[in-house]
Length: 136
Image (cartoon, helix red, strand yellow):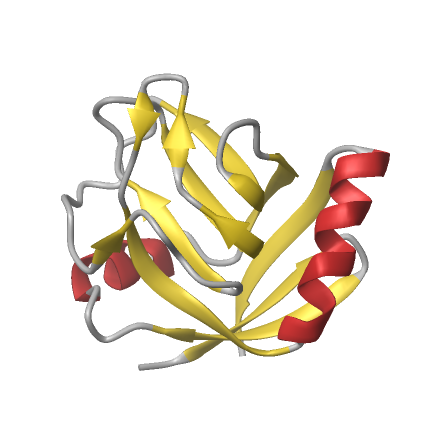
């Protein structure tokens, strides 16, 4: 699987696509370069997210979890709550106002993970930040 460059809030990260989520990875790669904003989560703990509303990436559940570790990026394909991308920077239990969710673990930060808590605090205290996912 390929690696991606993620630039967010002035920080640069390198991420590995996860082989256990091939459909999610394939669908996401078609969106690259992907630009959006990250905001701080409301229910999930130490994470930032990209709300995607009714966007349908055309994938179901694969390699899904409710308890991602720092740097394990999830795509929630929609259903109970809106579609979203979740990027944990610390302790996270993936949830929404509807209750606990599970998302597809499709990317893992492999370089720069130590900067994630600083990014999370920046988003918490300074608000929405630009994010871009690009092929390396």
